[in-house]
Length: 302
Image (cartoon, rainbow, N blue to C red; front, side, top):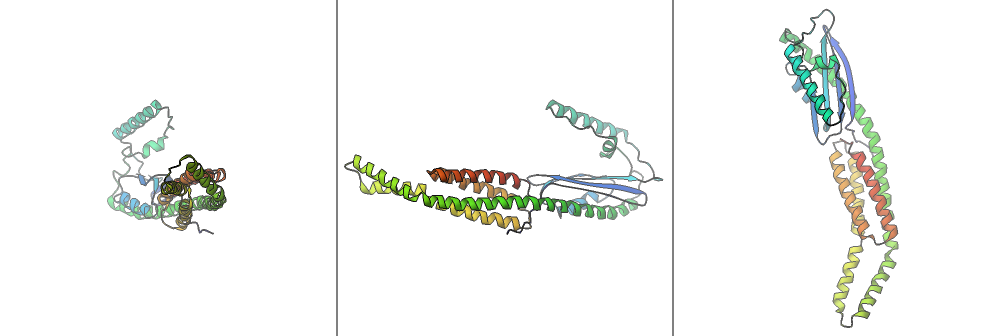
């Protein structure tokens, strides 16, 4: 039984926190991606926050399109944020431009709320009169809550990754079974294949009185090699072993599995092209079907 350690690239976590005079909310979301694309929506008046968030997130997340947002406000009794008129105008213009561009492509964007607009960079001046030492005191508390949110986020991705890994493991088992069925079908077709070669040889020799026996033997040997699928079966078995090893690996294995899918499909295609036998061809087509299904699952793995 394979020990599953795969991690999903899809995840979500949120966390509310606060300290004297401040409340905040962290929000972490991720979807599939080819690499790590980390997008941060953070207030720009807390020195060192962006660098700290990137370092903390990079220690947990290796791959995916990830958005980390922080909304922070003063609590009752504190100074209310002030709207920067120029910043607000720029934000609204950007929203209008994005909405218009999406509309031209037939895409309808959700309307942002006032809270969303106020959270955009440059719209408010909440930190304008905040002393540097106050902002510095906020940073450790914010990072503590981010660490807890990242722990929840990672737990969700691992739980989903475990489920995905179980599906992939079952598909790998199916490929292993089909590989052995293909080996049995290839062995079963051997007498018929040998007889076909003998019949072909007899027809050639009967129609060519001066046929070069060595040349004929070479051509028939070449045909026999072209129909031999032992090498493809061996490689399929090796790929099955590699896939099981990747599923048990605690690192980021999504790209390795994705590459392995190409290799699986290459062998299945070659098996079909060499088959010349209905049963073996049917098994090859089943292999391709399972591999295509597995490739869809692998796209979700970190």
